[in-house]
Image 1 (tube, rainbow, N blue to C red):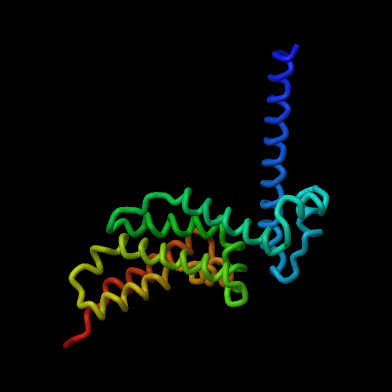
Image 2: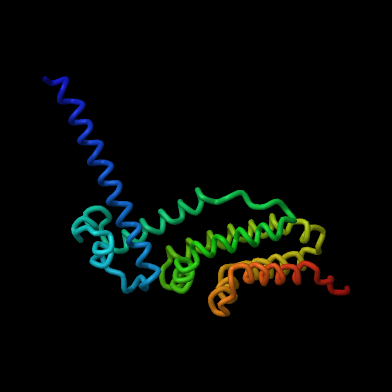
Length: 205
């Protein structure tokens, strides 16, 4: 009899573990959805529990305070970004790079822009975007390596910064959201911007 019960006990434990994991994922996903609709100061455990379809005590038991839950949500998002990062285009593949960035902004834009608006008030959000800006700089340096190669150091630093700004999410927002351009026209506008930067003649010495 003992031998027959052990597999059943293991199965029940496995089911419970899977259920707990699914509940945790549902809570984190609900919190992330709500951060595109509310400021973090406005977000409550009640809001998150209702969106996730669970009791508030379940949220508290699983993650603790609201700030603990938000921190877990940000950590999960950062891990997803890092694990899902695609290999950057090769140096010179500028059009491919712009298309890749625009696609990323289309998927994550609302979430990221709301986060940017709050980074001065939440240190862990500022830390997340500091990492994002550093990744973006490395991306730009690789994609535009041929255009930056051989430039005087001061000019190279200036153009790298200009290319970062031209391809950053807030520039995408201006074309795509503020001006309501199509995705295709937004890509073309960004491509024109970076071309204007890279073909500009060096100042005379």
